[in-house]
Image: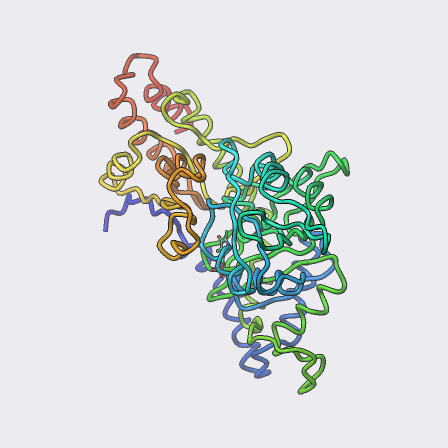
Length: 418
Ligand SMILES: *Cc1c(COP(=O)(O)O)cnc(C)c1O
């Protein structure tokens, strides 16, 4: 393998650096044979709740389970409609379906790639009406009650929550945040005049600790955070076969617990999360320096004034995306596409009856997005090379080459900073 290859994601280095502490977690679990639940899980839950400014945190077996449990605990059931966005990972919609409900979509904001509150307003006011006999909000086309909204803080960018929370309150909907890519992201609420952490804004929130996430386990893991006591009580039961206490089942639940080795590992890594997120933000600033002048040919992530993003992914937009990706692959630079097909056009959801053109922004964006390498250990030197390769390609394509071209700009930055 090329020694100079730049991987899309580096999961080896952080674990090598923390190896001793991580191995100690495993030894502790062996010595006590405490594999499921126990003090390591409780310790992590307490710490992660504090990190999110949430009252409760429950470790579960994955982000998908976290979403599903949060929806069920929030009262979503068979025959309900839950609204989310088409531009997300399929797990968001899977959790809705697994809770018995039908996913429906509103389009995203072209600037943030997250739920557009105006589209939600339009959906609730135009496509829905209040049923006179039940007083419930019903989707007119589907004839089904709309009960919940799942905004997704995609790529580590917080969704514009004030208007969404306001609409939800007015229409009596519960809000479950999909914070699976947003550990530590913050949103400035004008309503409350303060910065608020992802995971403490909705009725409940779901986190994933899949290895590649900003906080990742060495296996599968997830968590639900909430400030709602009733939801907390239900999540505790849902993840553990509906048990109120051992072998007393108040409801049917799931096998969805967090195991203690993963919890111990997450507790160790949580201590580094703030610094890691800060490094990701620094990588963003560097990409902005290197690529900002080429904004006509490459659109960088924009952080609205209400957002402090944690850049789980670094998603740029280019024409000719597939060619740019191929060019970078040939230069041994790994990239990704998150996500190439919006959910409403996935084969898995063909039965829902959507067609091309239903969510124009998501569709347009899906054809142009490209995720560049982004992780705390990414170096300036690597970013210089990535930027140089991107600019070589896009400038050649658009014959922007001149002495003041963006690629000359990168070369000059690179020599300044070594
Ligand atoms: C990763 C992810 C999930 C699912 O998490 P798992 O732990 O893989 O089940 C859900 N939603 C989004 C947006 C994600 O990125």
